[in-house]
Image (cartoon, rainbow, N blue to C red):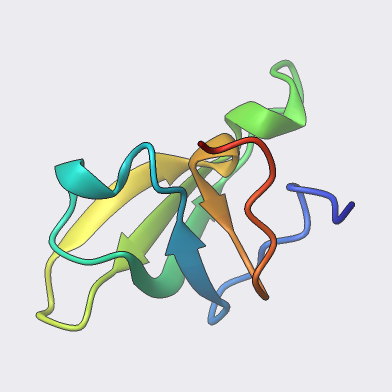
Length: 73
C-alpha cells in the first residue's frame, strides 16, 4: 500500500470516488503542499489544479495516485 504522504508538487492525482462530487473533475495536478509536523500525515493538505484552471485544497486521505483507491467505496 503506498504511503499517502508521498505526494509532491507536479504529481498527477485522482480524487477518491467518495469525494469526487465536490470538485470539477476526478483528477488534477498538485501545485502546492502544506504539511504540519503536529498533525498526522493523512491531514497533509494539497492544493490541486484541475484541467479547467480551478484550484481546491484536499487532504491526503482524499486523493490517490497510480490506480490505488484504498477503502474509498
